[in-house]
Image (cartoon, rainbow, N blue to C red; front, side, top):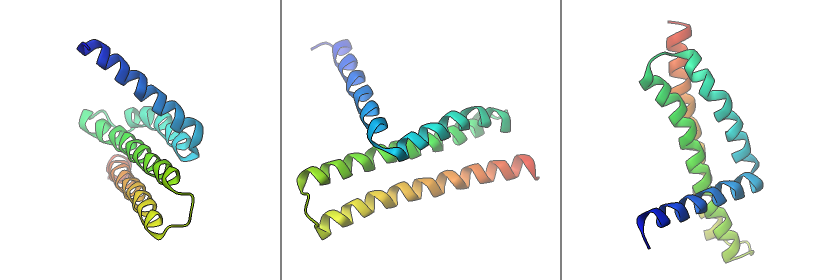
Length: 119
């Protein structure tokens, strides 16, 4: 298989994954809304390219972590439908990863907003 075919198939698989998570996860749909609002807001807040990259990048980072968490949850649900304490721990760890990514994003946004609007 040539390189372009592999890239094309990978792009289709990625698109299918984005469609699936958008259809099944309210949190991901909310993060899309945050991204749509956050991109123009980043351009409004700062002219610095690095700061814009940080503002937009942390939102994309949240979305990446949400995708991984959703994949873990879907796989766990596929493995067993029973209440399993180990599966619960795994799901809780994925949730904690999303929570930490939200804290990191909040810190970046707060830092830049305070720097631009109050200092």
